[in-house]
Image (cartoon, rainbow, N blue to C red; front, side, top):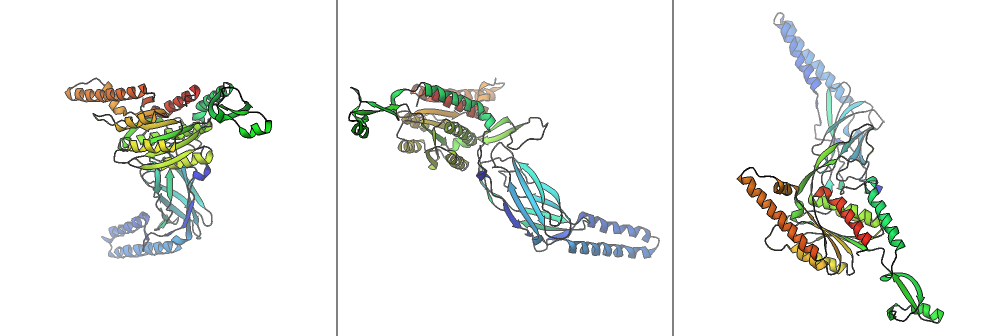
Length: 480
């Protein structure tokens, strides 16, 4: 499902000294120097043994000096970082580090890859042995934690000979910008939705309705009562009689993904989910679960990607509008693999803002960009206010022209508090406040549903599957 071009490009660079005096004695050398003090013990009986200690230390330092001289210079190391797949949320990414030793000495290396916190919580230390003229490689996995563009740091290298008396320090400037994408569903996860979409497409093809819509279907002779605007004058001139165009219901509609990027979508939600990997897992490894903490906007982007894949497979055109105080990302409806890639790139750059989103501005922009009837997926949340939220007013404006699937993302913690049985006065007030918030949300969505909108109030873990099922229901009923 992912194009190889989404992968970060490999980056390669020669190492350089980490600082001016980029070397030091190893713990092994320090231990040998400290061991020289053992010669002081027989010195209590014969003072001549005391002169053995400086001789021993001098011998150790000379050996360390010779060992350090044998070590390759930092410029004789070439480092490279490459990525096996595109980094995405909720999936593991494999990184390969390669060190090419152009010296003549075998060295033991310790590597620290400086990656941003969005990729790893804390950089790990890796070890490898670099033989002369033979690239040494190691691989490790990371699981991205945040979407967006992130700058990677340098690769820090500490190396020593097998004797291990002196250690040199180097760094390779492997800086690059890595883009972390929303969670991408695999083909196996989408299989059931794709199969149902194919079945719906076959049913609609068998029950095609003529005379409705504006998709051209065929030509026929003019009949009394036909609209004069549908007459095909070129065909009329060729045949010598009036010929009219016959239309059918559109099979390819526009689907808009509208994402709220305001402050309400910044709240983070912890969910337990099975660990996914785009890499082949080791044989016999049991399934594991992990608690992931993502923002509501991250979950919305994941759902947007999944719906875009399904809609494009079904023959629809997909557009994107992500907004906060202004319009962050705007992509007109299109189809094809190139359009899907462009949409994924846009979703990776969406950011939640600290202020309230301008919903009416987004509504006006969407009505201008899409004058014809379409299906709109609007993922947002409802602000807790005594007045009617602005997003409800914007949704009512869209309902005059479009089919609206309005999704409000709930907060699981609030739902748990509302359903819990209070044990003291403080919990009673918390439960009453949570129930009031839930009742207000339910009332707002019910009023919106009465006006013709399809409404969902979901926790983030159930968002994607519910939206895909609702989309297939819209297709099956030919509501657009």
